[in-house]
Amino acid sequence: CPHRGAPVFLGRLTGNEPLTILPLTSEMEEAAAKAHYKVCDRLKLEKKQRRMCRRDPGVAETLMEAISMSALECQYQFRFERWNCTLEGRYRASLLKRGFKETAFLYAISSAGLTHAMAKACSAGRMERCTCDEAPDLENREAWQWGGCGDNLKYSNKFVKEFLGRKPNKDLRARVDFHNNLVGMKVIKAGVETTCKCHGVSGSCTVRTCWRQLSPFHEIGKQLKQKYETSLKVGSTTNEATGEGDISPPKKSIPGHSDQIPRTTDLVYIDDSPSFCLMSRYSPGTSGRKCYKDKNCDSICCGRGHNTQSRVVTRPCQCQVRWCCYVECKQCTQREEVYTCKD
Image (cartoon, rainbow, N blue to C red; front, side):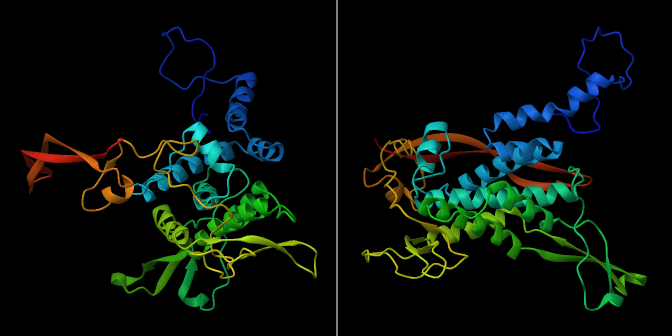
């Protein structure tokens, strides 16, 4: 989908046109404006989500960015694990049907990704319905000037909550998914920092211009991975006062599982995960997976052992910075060993 404001020409070019921006007819402008509809349709959204996607051209682009960012961060965080966030079609679909702790992470990282991407899109001017973050109430206004362009978390939170839907009342799985979505959003909120720039004679900082900024998404992924490691298995109880279902520890005590009541910041799950050692509907298994001998071969290869291959590689080495302004390196050849899991 083209960026707004970029030249768009939907007719056939002869090659003899002058190198200028070709004017758009009203029909072309309308077609360009609706180009994002196709992106929204490809995402297989629910009816309400598709309507929200279509109402602002920037939403489709932001959704695509959020999906990509979340998937890449998931794969990075699980690069040393048996389940390395394999999201090819059939594996992803099967995994999302079950309430594993890996599924909990996927819901949290996805909601966090959308919250992060939307807040950034607002401040970058890519959205029609939001702009920069508004100035908060600061106690010492004399020493502050609210400026720059802060990430608009207020609008982003509102959008994502509406996009993901209301809290379900009865179905345990739906409530668990909703809970994990909120965990992702809360990690984003907790990572907001006030960034300031000093102004004054000789850097005296008599006045500071400040704005709010989200943490880098890699930091968000790191925190969610830690929450995955301490995630809690839950069951369902009924709140006698409201008649609504509540998330709670399993009714029967399970060896190896905590009976701790989950907090609103904990990731929760309802199904025990498979080993992910062998190919199944949930993952391709670990046969042939690259591992690191002193780090994770024993765990990833599930006791099957690993193969060792030796290869020669050439890499830049002994690099030096030369005046001005380039880096000069030698090419060094070395032999390295590559370890992969046996079948």
